[in-house]
Image (cartoon, rainbow, N blue to C red; front, side, top):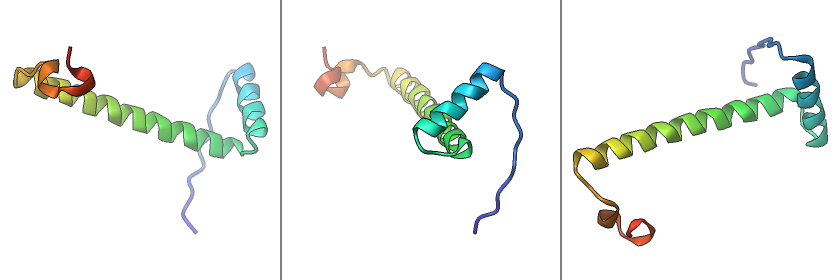
Length: 74
């Protein structure tokens, strides 16, 4: 069994109710819903970092959409 860390958060009442209703509608616990939300946040942050790095590399190498071909080519 994995070690768990309990974290308490505060939300506006309406948001808290919405979280509970959504979890119930999806047959999940609030914890499962929040964990999934955090995983999606991490993935998006990682993706944005990779995008920024890719744009920086393309700019440094003076690449254009034509260099990538396919759907990127004008």
